[in-house]
Structures are given as structure tokens and as C-alpha cells.
Length: 92
Image 1 (cartoon, rainbow, N blue to C red):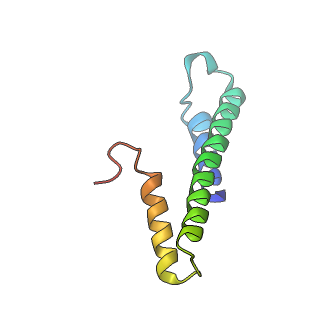
Image 2: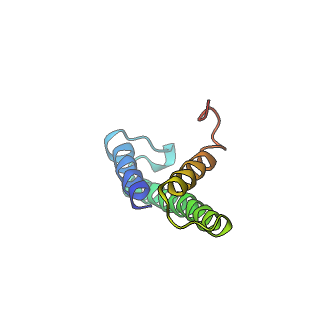
Image 3: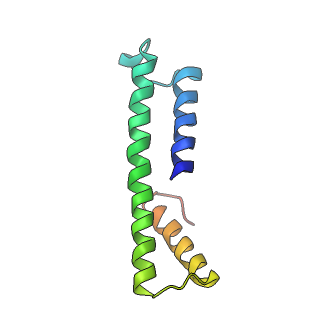
């Protein structure tokens, strides 16, 4: 979750302060636009990270995982596939 959050903050800062990619009503109010993007990134991080954590915990309890490398690989790959399954065009 920390990686998602850090990347989102850097992306928001570049988008607002360097590229000035904001709505028409936010031009000149860069700090407000940055705060809005930060709030969105925090919510995104909590939703995606919480979902992946929940799926991991459920998978561990359903399949009685003892942290073998095969189970860790399966949980990671299934959580990644579910994370991107709702994004159009993300999976072949």
C-alpha cells in the first residue's frame, strides 16, 4: 500500500505543479487541486490495498496456507488478476 500511495503522490505532484493538468476552475489554485488528487489517491490506496489484503486473508483461511512458496505465488497472482479484472483492456 505504501508503494501505491507514494507513486500516486508523486504522480499528482507532477500532474498539478509541472503539467498544470487541472480543471478550468482550479487554474491558479494549485494547492487545492493537489489536495483533491491526494484525497483521491488515499481512497484508491485504501480500496485496492484493503481488497487485496482481504482476498489474501480469505485465501489463506480457505486453503489453510502454511506460507509455502507455491501458495504465496498463487495468492499473489490471483489477487493481481482480480485487481486488474475490472479495468478494460488490461488483461489480454
